Length: 206
Length: 206
DNA sequence: ATGTATTTGTGCAAATTTGCACTTATGCTT
DNA sequence: AAGCATAAGTGCAAATTTGCACAAATACAT
Image 1: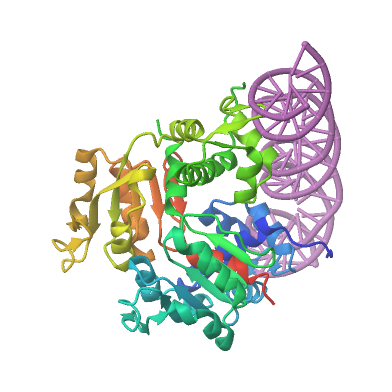
Image 2 (image 1 turned 180 degrees about the horizontal axis):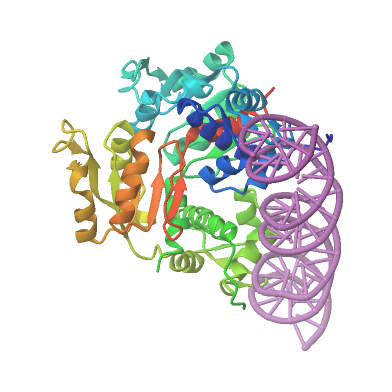
């Protein structure tokens, strides 16, 4: 045990472990090993053992890890042993696809409101939600105590919305807009930009 | 100069630099510095200078970097000074959102075919494309010499499709399905799973 | 022309991250 | 009961990544 903060690069791998373990659970496996898990993920077994050992002794020597138990532990560590309310901003094609995605709930997240500033979209359905006016977003997020947001608006609008989200007390933003945002240090932000991934791959292609 | 391979972690940052520089170009800036670029991206200026210096001397001391010139260099390095044909597999909500996204072309990519194995979707439009039957995907990708694919199918189908893509000669796969895939070592693969990002952030949230 | 303010590219050291390889513990077979 | 195979947890070394700090170069003001 140590008091030092656990490196973020380790935190980043835990959700990957959790995802793979959840899949194993659906395959009715009871036990796995760092080696098996590593083989599935393309990660060395030593790294998996060392990562997990940061948080406790979850395995049994000679046997491996009990999958259900380890899932529980990881959920607890990542704070997804609860369902987080999430605000989705942007009800364009991408926003609608996100609103319709069924994969959030069993991994700890639940969209509770969808916003857009286009008057033609406000009041219309987006999945099972009715699109709300972005104009009211700060008050509503405060009232609903929402702390996580997904941003699926055009890049040009992203910073403005992000500023409002911060004002509303949002603590984590997942930004789909292809731009870097300025947020206070104590607000977490992550980005999804498919083109970054594509360009990273074409580098290696003659 | 050195013959050693350039670390992938550096390659991963280049698209980020390119994106930020492109934005600067639209702001009619001519020149930037490693410091300014770093401030925008939350990266140290030393790292940016060192990253870029792996590929040549692109800056001018006392002045900085010419934005248009550096964009050209990065595009060349990343092989996006050309337009890559991309196959999109999956015409569900997400697939349609991807098909409709207008941000690929000016960053080096162009969807040229959309596939789905649902007979109700085949023949129907997805954005400006007509959905094609996945059944024929291998032959068509070979014929069209497509080398990059985006995979927006359910996790349960992803590995099967990936195997076909590999057989068809695809060299880079961007997988939106929340699962890890097995592909030969010489095929590049990248993943997008929003929940991984969300869980990475909730770790830090009490 | 000279001096000053910038900013790059880089050698070197610090910090971080990874992984080898070993000890310890467990279960199974004989 | 003993021996063997398996696999976790970990100390330590190797490898990788980051960043400090400085020389060299450039632009601009005086």
